[in-house]
Length: 554
Image (tube, rainbow, N blue to C red; front, side):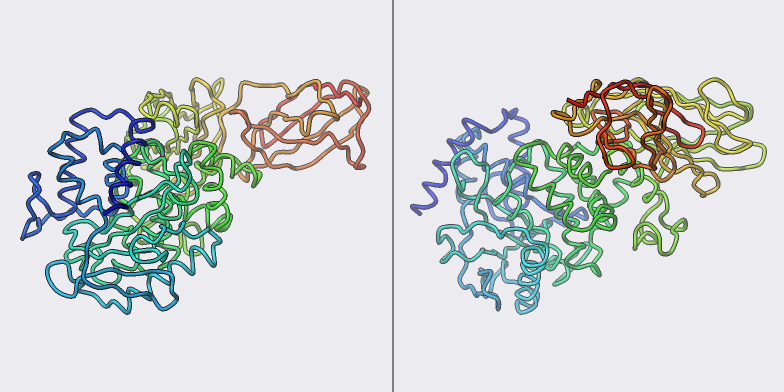
């Protein structure tokens, strides 16, 4: 009881100084959602029969902790009911898992008694710990100062009705750190869920245990970056238990509306975006995801993702565009051995619009949210060709600050060339018109074949930066380039007398919204160049950029 009173005093202080202002309607909504999760009426009366809802809540992590960190903003009557429900549950027995990592609390009988094998649950919990901590290298959640009986991580089994589970934060590890101890609550039977019984328990503990790692070791900032917490935990379900596909139920919410911003906290969409981490892991391994969490205390989630990708000599825009390609080749379009391993089980992308195309031209004016992939389908009225254009917006700043921003674009499919058009085949050209073109990418599929994967819109810049480039203070000079289908471009550097001093085929990356090649100023003989004016030419296919840069060898 003493610990509970201290906890509520601390949380009240945190709420006063740090939690976002919530409207009364938002508070009421959170209150009603939480009582529904715990199986109570709005008046605090325990329900004897749970609802028969067919939509189940994957994770109440955000709901529970938004209430907890805004506790003193609720009316007195609601606070009185919430206080006991936000305290640790009381059960009649507990046990420690075989590896000693967890203490599981449960009732031997009654409505909260578990209906699945506790031995299997214990193995599942230790497996989640071994994979996420011992194999992936995440730090374990911080100890809870003996709450629950000891410093083992506590799991409580309750009849949650239509909710898989949640991780509830408790004490702040260091004042002002936004890192918290926590405990986990999971459902007692998962009856009627998409995945039932012990398999549902397995993916739930894999999911929730990573929430305890996130909130305990990095930062709890769910109100702004909740999508990242959830997509990471959903991906952990897949990584720990790849044969259990509970996340399949959420995929249509993304595949039907890919034009919704990555940065929006849309519950089912953020669960579906677990496949983004599956995509990153398949390309770059597990560590890139951990690196993003290590960056989270210093920056917002989208920026952390972008910064981690830059360390792999790629950009967020390139990867989001390629992710669009992976999501296109699913269901009957799946290609064995390429893209997602389970692609044949995934739904098909739904285009934002499907249009009849009659040569010589069809122009469409649409808009999208920031940090999105949009698919436009054209059906040739003459030969029934189907051409799908993938439009990627990678404006991270808008994605962080203005997720509801409306970003217009104009796309034209043509049968012959015109100014600004790009040749796709002998029969098709495309023209793409946008503001801030450096934040946009596109690619096309003709009859389910990639025409030009990751095709970039031409950039406005034709200059290198910084210029002058100083060896003593600048690590790199960034030179504008348009990538080929593989994300590379040829670069040649000439002296003012047109002597070739450097030549390479280098990766094109996104820096400050510009598509560039990064060069350290070292020539083909591994030497620094003399001070002077140099010419550069970058080329990929029919795209080329020319310009000058100044080098000071001081």
